[in-house]
Picture 1 (cartoon, helix red, strand yellow):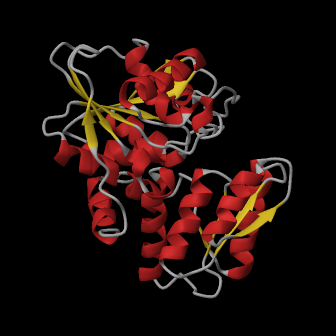
Picture 2 (tube, rainbow, N blue to C red):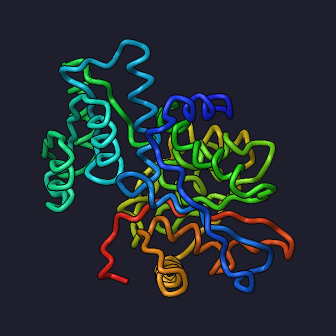
Length: 310
């Protein structure tokens, strides 16, 4: 479980290492109420995940757990892998990243360019995860989960605490959900001051299904945003914070995600990945309808995408 106190500790710990990402107001006539974009896609490595990675590694160092010879290990060929490799490089320790054998070569090369040691093997992410956990146990490397660790989620939550300062009186925050680390952190950061609406693709409804079942459950994953919102189950931290803070969940279709991503480019010249566009799709599709006077913020959480696909 995490609270605003944990988010504030993360903000203090990572001060000067993360970017204060800008907020841009949406066109006033686009929706009921007033909306802003929190441009977190401009964060180091192109996603919010650098915040949690830095917080996790620094906290491990404070506790004396971080060994300079073996550093950290993560299972992810995507945004979490890039973020943890970047954070480790900034702190001068090695990073080992386990990825499935079929991981795209462009992502493998990005990881290597940052300085990570990449270990490929297995057909699915689950096998890479198991290998990474075994590596941590055998070597003493600090394991950094993609989303379901308190320090990872609290670090991600600094997006929310920044937002409260940048948009005074914000009432609603729309955030895309995969494993739930960003949603958990933001919900903890704004608890008692704003509500959080979790936005999920129809093809990967992890939180939506968990709330219906009363507990985290496995879901089938498909769709255009599966590369970043493709967790098969909401994390325990994400679920517990969502229940505690009353997070709402809405679903959006692939069609609306693609349209929202295109609109962000055509109208604002913002290039984001499909997972980030999902949050905006809640507004453009009508899945979430603000009141006429409502102050709404949309977290655009990542930009690791191919601009040529716009």
